[in-house]
Length: 174
Image (cartoon, rainbow, N blue to C red; front, side, top):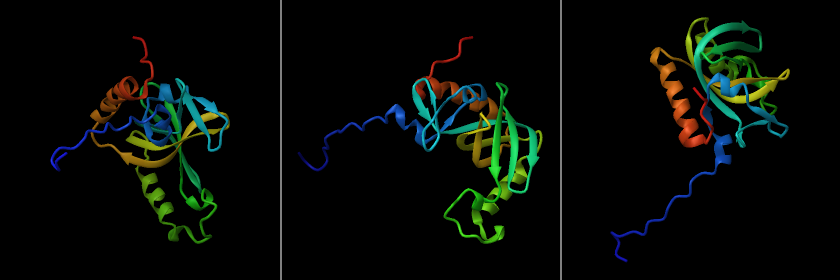
């Protein structure tokens, strides 16, 4: 075989169980109906597939700031997703040193993200799906202010597309 001709080797498609590795674009109605699995680390099941991380887009309808965390609700039109943003990651990381918050770059980033969480703002939230007091919520890793209101509709369309083409989830009936 000459150097210009290469044998085609198909790339194996990721198994559906690899969905737990990515932030799935989900609507609140889908996220809030996940089935919890009692595993470590915690995970959830949707249509037989393991789900551990999610991305939601919606409007902030509730905000409760405490010393160590910010709790807020994101409404995407199909439901309200409870989210928590930890403001001092030393409480989450057992291996972190016991320095002040201003020496914790992750905590500083969380404080900056918390400033964009205001009532009525459109946000994109990514994070781990967790159970708290028997209810599903997102432990936010990223919180991004969306300035274009069309982003919410685009997210809806992407959720439908991804459910059909990538996740193998059944589509809701009309």
